[in-house]
Length: 382
Image (cartoon, rainbow, N blue to C red; front, top):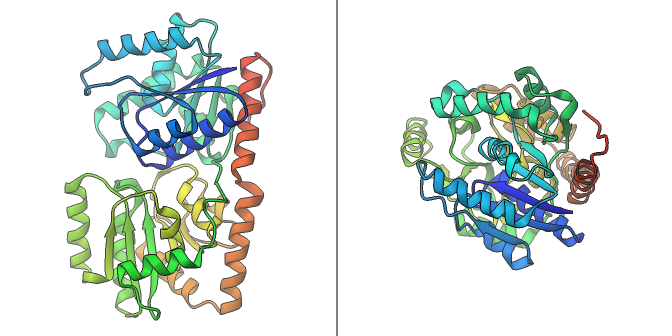
């Protein structure tokens, strides 16, 4: 079986990390894997190449580089002749269907990674793209959705339920694990004292991630306690970041809120935190951040968006989205828990990831579904 994954880029991001894990895992099982990206570069691309997985850049030069880009894509597909052409996210999914005339025997697989997207918050291009993706979804042979919430959302939009299957993300529990040395190193680098507790939000700077809710909740809790610091890890549009910084100043957080760019040492960051928060208000499917933090034994306070509630289970804390008051209250409850209770939640969080969201489970489920699709066998739905 030959699999060609098609994705926009291999820069840091939850979707991209899952693609890299999947490609590496399938390649290690003897599957011929190639990953084609619209744009070149990206540290995750270099990570893939170092393991032996073939990475092909289509050298897209911008939004309007359409014809040349598509011709290069046709050439790559015709040369590889994949058994499976697997799109990752909307643009790549749409392109796989447009490529079908050039590889009629290839099976088309789509990857859906979000739920309940509020597209009116974005540009008209995203809205049109979402409409086209829905209309073309019936031409896919298999649609892999990474969350139950995403399955339900896609079904309501009109995606064919009989072609969809839920395969939750997989977490590398060997990479993401408790590490006291990393914890101490990162906290020293940020100037966090032993008496201070650290609450963090890790995710790109995007309205869906709820940074405004995080900052407002931090401002509320900061009025009551002076032993808590706050951390935002991620990158995004500079104008949006400046609005968030202005909000943090309005909430009088000052030096108590630390801003950190995304990097590859995210496991050490999780360990440095006392609480990890996911504040998404919409759009989230299965959050890698939640799974990775739990694998590191970090308690999680999450908003009830996507599969977050299903992911954290009983070790986690769940609040309604968009409520700084509820979020600050849950933080307070988690931080004030007794020592034994914190230990129980920490241990149970890691056990839950190993039991339900391991990388091995992701690879087994995906390999089985792709093999069945490549052989035109029947495959189950949700």
